[in-house]
Each structure stands twice: as C-alpha cells, then as structure tokens.
Amino acid sequence: MPELPAIPEIEPLSLRAKPARSSMKKLRLLPLVAATYYMVAGGPYGLEDIIGNAGYRIALLLLLLLPFLWSLPTALMIGELASSIPAEGGFYAWVRRALGPFWGFQEAWLSLAASVFDMAIYPTIFVDYLTRIAPGWTTGHRGFLLALLVVAIAAVWNLRGAASVGEGSAAMMFLSLSPFALLIVLALSSALHHHTHAAFSGRPIGFSFSGALLVALWNYMGWDNASTVALEVEDPQRNYPRAMLTAALMVMLVYCLPLLAIWVAGVAPDRFSTGAWVDAAALFGGSALALAVVCAGSLDGLGTFTSLTMSYTRLPYAMAQDGLLPKLFTRRLKNGAPWVSILFCAGAWALALNFTFERLITMDLVLYGLSLILEFVALIVLRVREPDLHRPFRVPGGISGAIAVGLGPTALILYAIYAARGERVGAMHALLFAALVAAGGAVLYLIAKSATRAHNKTAQS
Image (cartoon, rainbow, N blue to C red; front, side, top):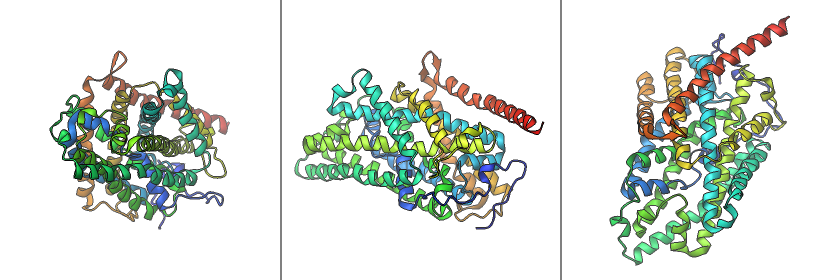
C-alpha cells in the first residue's frame, strides 16, 4: 500500500509508521469477526426487552430493518476508513486526521465516556442470568462481587494480548450459540406438533415503541470498536471490510432466528423481560437446556466485556502517543497489550456497576451516537480533502454516497436523543447530564494542551 498522505500540522503519532513487534501475534480474520460479533451483539441476550416493550411483530420488524438503516451504513463507513487508515486508535485517528486534534480528542472522549455506561451493562446481564438458576449467589453484595469478577477476568485476559482475546472470542462464540441452535430446533418442532396461538394474540407487558427502538439500537451498535486495534490485525486493509460485512449478516441472523422460532412456537410476549431466554429454554428443552442458556449468557457477557476492553483501552494509548494523556499510558507488554490503559479503564468501569440497565442504555446511546456522527463527518471530509487517499474498500457513490450512507444512522441517533428527553440520572435530566459529559471533553482538551505545552517548555529549558 502506498504511504498515506500526511497533514503535518495535525498528524498524530499514532498514524506514523512503527517497527513491527516480532513477538506480537496478530488478529486474523475469524478472530476479528468473532471479536466484532461480541463488540456488537454477544448473542440474542438483551432482545427480551424489545419483545416485552413492543411484541413480536414490531420486534422482528425492527431487527430486520435496522441492519439496513444502521448496521450496514456503519459497516460500510468503517470498512472504508479502517482499510484506508489502519491506525491504532481507529476512529479517534480518523476524526483527528479529518477534523483536527480538537475533534479527535472529542471523539475519543465521547467514546470513553460512553464506555463507562456501556461496559457496566454486561456484568449486569451476567448477574441477571445467573440469578435465574442460582439466586442465592447474586443476592446483596454477592451480585456486585460477581460483576467485579467479570471486570477482573477481562482485564487479565486482555493483558495476554489482542490475538488471545480474538481467538478466545471465536471459541466462546461457537460454544455460546449452540444452546440457541438447539432452542430454535426444539421451538420449531413444538410449533409443528402443537398449534398454539399465544404469541400471535398476546400483548407485550407495556407497549413502548421508543423503548423497544432504543434497546434495538443498543443491540446493533458498536461496529466501530474493532477499528481501534488496527495495528494488531493481520492485513487490516483486506480483513476489516470482510469482517464488518460478515459480522453484520451474522448478528442479524443470531437476533432474528431465535426470536422467530419462539414466536411461531407460541410463547406469549408478556413473558419476556431481561433473562427470559432461560424460561424459553426450560419450556422447550427442560432444565438442562435452561442451564446451557445461562452458561451461554455468562460466556457472552464475559466475551463482550473482554472484546470491548480490547477496543476501548487502545484509545488512551493512542491519545498518550499524541501527547494528550500522560506518557504512562503508552506502556505496553511484549505482546502489545497496553497494560496501564487496561488497568486504568477496568477501574473506571467498575465504578459504574450499580447503574440500572435502562439508564445505562440511554446514556450509552446518546454519547455513542454523537461520536458516530463525527465518524460519518470524517468520512465525508476525507473524501473532499484527500481524494487520492488509497482506499482498498470504498463506499460506493462518490461524495454523494459518503453523505447518503450517514443519513440513516444520524436520523436514528437524533430520534434516540429525542426519545430520551424524559429520562433522568438522579435528580438531573438525562440529556442535560449527557450534554455536561460531552462538554467536559472541551475542558479536558484545553487542560491536556496546556499540560503538553508546559511539559515541552520544561523539556526545552
């Protein structure tokens, strides 16, 4: 690949060529697909609230349409930018290159702030599923300690390097999907032998289209997270587009097939809330399948948390290389793992474990949505400013195509922000809280730049 055109005044260190680490084992295609799968989905867990809020028809419609309005456009954008700018830090590097260091910092800040809410969701789901079969293990402080254990395991695993995380994700993906494959077969078999109609005539627990849409958007978000480990991926120009499109199709099937099977089998929608896949498994396969679904849920929670830990912890590393965080964050092990960043982020995520599931989704969507809009803007700006940039994969349609691909995700993000207008975080309006968090990025950037100038003056004197 020809050398990427540089913009001297804003070129971050994370975009500059680095000598290859001979001891660093890189992510291949299948582990990259598996890691992307976990960063986005991690199985059909989390869909229960869509069914509970809107019923089967609307839930299935949302899960079939959103890939074309949300997932596919995002995957196309990431395929182009990740293959043309395969830099550590991923979307942070893209936005910085297109819009300058200030907006690059905001992109990283919004993503890291969203991660505080996002990463607390998966240990929460882990505990919710475990409660279904062993409530004594999760009562009182035990549930919190189990959630902390998930954080600790993911941190230790990430210290083993990106290749270890990707290969482990591939193994967990196949194991965790097997109970749902059996559930689909048993549910369809039951539908053929028992002509029940509960699912078709039943009503959801309490109809809320906005609630269902927000949960569906959350279940389909996170496609850009795999981009942050670009320097740890084998042949990123070729493998990123393939991984994005493969994972997009896979996630849609993993979501839609189990939902369709239990709908046809006649499970009423008002029986669905977080963790209800265990009840569905017990209904069709008995206690053994229910236990398998719980174990799969535990694996998925751990797999998602571990893969996202790999993604998010590369942001402080890249920012530190660009002088926006202390140099301490650039320290890596021989296998490439940024160990200071991993330990720091794990500690921050542990602080958010007591938030409720719904509130986490609202805050996560708003902050993540703003960062995603910046990525689509970067796609357009780079098309205009750097038309000759080598793009192994390209969103079709020229400048118009680059603009059009961002319209669906942007519209959905704006609707999600509108739908969150009634949410609260403590005594504060949720959107005001999100706005304050987002504005904090500008303040932190000024502090970081001031600290960098002071350090440079001290070094020169």
